[in-house]
Image (tube, rainbow over all chains, first blue to last red; front, side, top):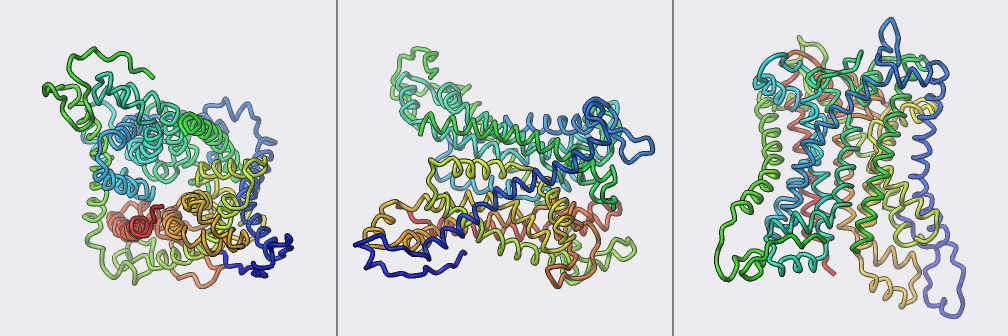
Length: 314
Length: 306
């Protein structure tokens, strides 16, 4: 806690004239300084990404980075196309979204419209616990528990590999359910009761109220929840590093293959002792910048949408 | 709103939780819908139960004092006598320091934004937007910040202090947002009464607002620290990925932490490593569960309803 004692606490004399209190000013200065730390963090992130990225693109053309379909910086024939990493990321994010969106929104409708207050008080902390489980644990569970089951149940043809994008996507989908559910539920709770009551007065059933009044009314918040979930999935590292592997080469066309994503490439490359200022070392920053831009765009969208539903009803 | 498509039902409106007055028509669609919603929650909870049960069963043989009495090893021949002691002490060092760095800064930022800042100024709005954006930056990008700037340019290297600084910056938005909510929940009348008695702004904040906001703030602080506790991705970039066989003894020591050690163990192919990983996971989950319950308890017990 910021223990800063006030300089001159003499409240009685201040009635006549605004006395200068240096202590108050100093404290305010400290508070501003603390607030500036978060601005400095953002600047620090941009600076630490930007310079090595510029250096990287001095040696590798942007066109190759965006269009080449091979990512083989650690091979003998080096190619620097980010597409394989991007496709790996998209697979995992897509699978996670397909799982998390229905489950998260269903859970949110139940919590907001159906659950009694007592039930809700019990269920919400459990969702919070699920949200608080470290992602290494999800990765371990996906790799050693879910994947063998998946391989057993796989109908025919090529079985999923020992590490694959599908199982990482499934685990990540469950991981982001609490994120989607909690933001979507906030949005649904913000829909005024008068709208629900109006619908009931027109003889709507509970399901009709939920699906035709509450969900459309909370739509911008629900979309914000989905966008935030997608952004979390895009930036998640440990689940994909453990469960989808670090294999890089061509574009992973099938989700049952093991392949690196943007995040797991960074994690994998950083584990080896790469010499500073080698091109391999710089790839970490170039991929990091790409990842940062994607998540930044999604977060900005989500913040904007949340603001919209706050404005409508609050 | 789209409430027009309801069929014109002859019986009265159907208030919530109550069957309609005229007759109890059973609507299979309604029941199915509710079941589907419950199923959504059930899937999430089943996953949680399976995850915990699996870790406990798989790690059962290794859940003994070896876990915290012995040092980690990467050699398969010695794994039976290995534990994760250096990861436990490393976690304590890193999280303790993280708390010491991020809590004062986060709470001070929140006080500035809630009690001092003029929200109509562009720089204060920028500050708010910046914090919201930071909350969504992937943790591995914070690792890149640590690697590029703090470890290399500032030159703190792969040490306990670098890890603590990076984790502090990572959870700072969580601390700020939670503390602001706690401050906002304190009613304005308390502040006005304090001002009316001649207190200055800081006296009001320090003696009236902060004490009333402490429960909410501590809940947020615990949740932020438990996030830092489970975080592995940024530390992979900060040199924690080795089987370190000694406990850290200063800010500039090499270190490893529990989530990182779990990751190291998972990577090894032999079953003994997997068992040890599961045992370490159980330990990590127990710590997190205790912290989470404490946060929920504080919230339910001490939070005042104004």
